Length: 236
Image (cartoon, rainbow, N blue to C red):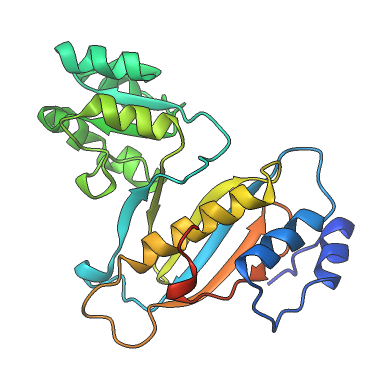
């Protein structure tokens, strides 16, 4: 396999990272802030290795969480709804609202949105889009709060930065928590809130440690291992 070529900026940042150390949330965020910035506002992400078997239904975690300080961007949200529900979705900030015609537009290749919300009575149209939306993680589902009768509230939350998550085949979660331009305390709050939320998802069938490893990084930066203790993640 061809070795990945790292930039000079990345290599310089990596010199200041101890790969064997687990940094506190505040220290990890501070170290990340000290890395040389790029020409764009990088997304800050968290990778969480869980002690789960995604092949087991109760351990295949999926959902959504509203972070205290959002994601630093306005999400493009569409909504499958009709009548009064459609009007509520539009008022809440959905960029596109419709029913069968919206499904047909997506089948035709239109994918310029981040999140799809659907009223339960629209699943007869949305269900046909599984092969299109599924691979991109955009398929509405009750678990993530994207299939709901209160489409107005859902659209409002996701436009403001409510973030979806789901375990991959290796039992990992990859979740954005903000931008490099965020103040350190805001990134720390978002990270603590996410970890506390994830800890609360622990399936009863999991034995031993649930969260095995937490790594914080920006789009173009090396990762920092974050120390995690369930009693130390509550936002104060």
